[in-house]
Structure formats: structure tokens, C-alpha cells
Image 1 (spheres, rainbow, N blue to C red):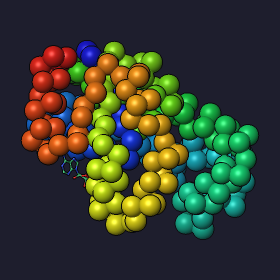
Image 2: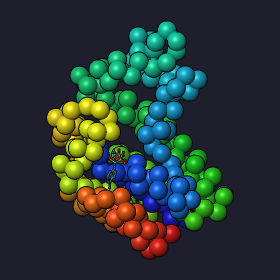
Image 3: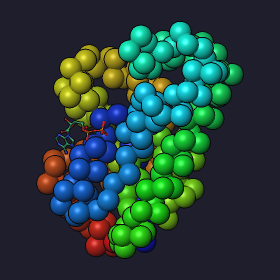
Length: 197
Ligand code: ADP
């Protein structure tokens, strides 16, 4: 079973690629962002650990995590950010391992680990192949602003805090260039499926 890491910055089209791989190629997708969210939902032991470290103030009355409050805390402390990442990365990794085992048992030919922070979190080290989606900067800005309904400047600010397409390309085995239309994107994906799956 091939483990394929899929990454890309905001507005690159990573979600579009992931959806195509799932819907048109029938590949199993492990969505790291979704896992990150799920492990901090009420009833999960990761949320209990976070509460132990950061205090009950970051738990709302309804038992859910005050994500904004927690983001504020780690934004102002590098040390606390590291502690939070240690807790969450370990839990995410365990869930990914569980899903990989499941995919293996189901004889999946390949599985996609869809993770915006694939390289930053080190998840690429468990992948056989890394695909990075990129597009011209202003194309990414316009698409992400339209999708999220926020200003282009806000998208540019978020992009500035992320790894650049060029950096991602250095660590990737394949670059998917999404500066063109969706048909051009889908053709590239088909080629990669032929090559790797
Ligand atoms: P990401 O997950 O990388 O942030 P998305 O896949 O959500 O990016 O793409 C951002 C927006 O751009 C979405 O609204 C998507 O439908 C649109 N989009 C993606 N690729 C193209 C393309 N080749 N042409 C036009 N719009 C696109």
C-alpha cells in the first residue's frame, strides 16, 4: 500500500485535489485537519489533557474547547505552543496510524494523507511519496478570498505565516500546478494516479 502525502498552502487547491482523489479515484483520504478537530471534541482524552495543562478556563460551559482562547494563549507563549503541539501531534499521529492499519487491512492500493502542515509536522516522513499543490500567488489569494469571504489582504497575511510553495516544492516528489483551470488540474491528478497507484 502506497502512503501518499498531499499538502499545499491556503488557496492552493489541496481540498479540490483531495475531493477528486476520493470521489473520482475512490482513494481513501486521511484528513489531518479533521482529525485535529475531532481529537479536541468533548469526550476525547486529548481534550482532558489540554484542560489539565491549560486550565478549565479554556473549556466552555457546554464542555467544548474555547479554540480562540487557546489560540490566544499559545500565540503569546512559544513554550505553551510547544506543549500544545506535543499533545496534539501525538494524538493525531496515533489516529493516523490507526486509520493506516485499517486501510492496509482493507487492501487499499493507496491512501492519501491530506495535511496542510504535512512537512512542518514531520508527517511526510511516514509517506512514500509527497505531492504538493501550488499555484501562482495572486491566483491563490483570489480563490481563497472568494471562498472564505474575507479580504485579499487577510489571505496574504495568512500566506505570509505559512511555508511558501517554493519551500514545499523542495520537499515534494511531485508538484501539482493549479494555476490553470480545474480540467487542467484533474488531468495532472489522473497522470499521478497512473504513475503511483
Ligand atoms: P485549499 O484547500 O488549498 O485552501 P481549495 O481546494 O479549497 O484550496 O480551493 C480554493 C478555492 O478555489 C475553492 O473555492 C475551489 O473551488 C477553487 N479552485 C480550486 N482550484 C481551482 C481551479 N483550478 N480553477 C478555479 N477555481 C479553483
